[in-house]
Image (cartoon, rainbow, N blue to C red):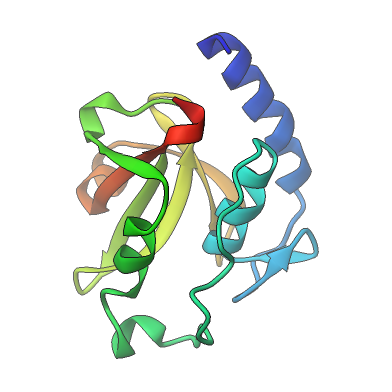
Length: 145
């Protein structure tokens, strides 16, 4: 698939998330959080990600187990990519506060990513200043290489 076709497909898929509200632990089009969005989004491209790691996801999960998200990412069929090599469909993850990874999104091209926000629902942000400073890494799924 060419990069132009991939970006066009991503734009079509993103349309279904325009009106989806943010919902902690949400995993459906009726409401989702950032992990729910990533799981649902990649499903449109034939990549099945686990919705959780088998344990309940409480609102303070990151306080109880700060390494939880990273451990889960390492189990996926993916490779780490440099922030200077980002491309469409890479998964990016962020530390919003206290150095703990608590947020994730999907690159929609080499400069922007889509994600769920408690205040703004599904949104597109530039991988610049604020977000780049908080980005702790990115992975590329082997199925998409």
